[in-house]
Length: 154
Image 1 (cartoon, rainbow, N blue to C red):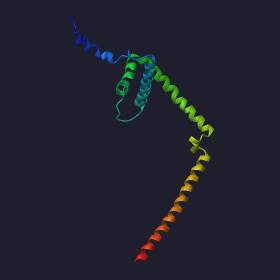
Image 2 (cartoon, helix red, strand yellow):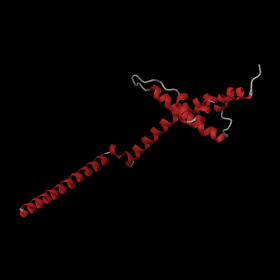
Image 3 (tube, helix red, strand yellow):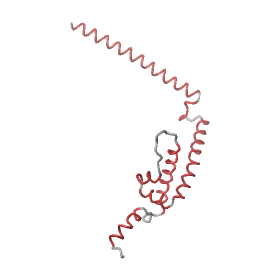
């Protein structure tokens, strides 16, 4: 039985929609990185002990986010899983190392841990209270003046 052109197009439409033939190497690498990040995120989400949650799948997430990344994931699942694993090992460790170096250096972005940061925060709080006390005295004086003006008009 011979197939018509229309039947052939219908048969291979799904396959052509999920191939990366139209991507060059750079685009394929970029979409592969998206797939690896999504795979890492799905792995982290699935490992969280949240009662009543359904496990997510990388395929489902990628099919909603980026069709080309989904195609790369389908054609090269082992490469995406390897990149996801490597990223999942080194990225958190690198961020932790960087954070510890910032803490050790006394960076202003993490200054709340140091004694100097506590003193600076208390100084800001004291300044706000002092400004508030002065403003409330001015408001009380204005109310008193408006009341006196109103009484004079009577």
